[in-house]
Length: 150
Image (cartoon, rainbow, N blue to C red; front, side, top):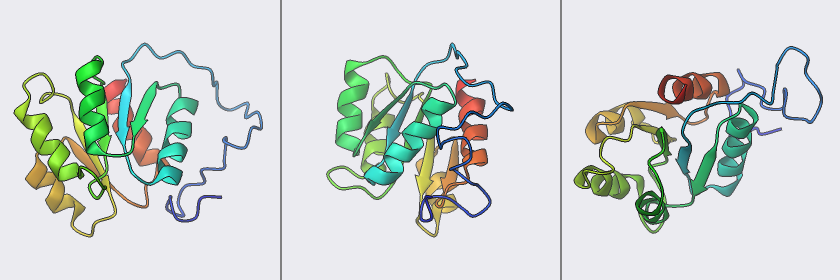
């Protein structure tokens, strides 16, 4: 269903087809903050939104770092930022630099989601909490989100 967005270990269509899955008690109520997703690829952004909402998380998504900075200045801090690196207008590197310079935003945990070959090195350079390499494994994404947002 999403061949370019996820690894073959995960089947994002499982549970997302609209069919009832009795093994999951969806409609969970989470009392956590929201997640800010910064991703320029609209297909991936919408898919990640769907997955996270399906799991009961509140999510706001934007297409670049400039939109993210504007959102963060106008709203309460999210429990987590999922950050792509290569984006137009303001890249993930530029966003992270601005975030770290603002004391009100610097403490928000950031997880890089990137297809760059050196994502581990980029994560270390940017001093982020964690990283996920594209294609994203849904189970790993959810583990990371739970660690930061409950």
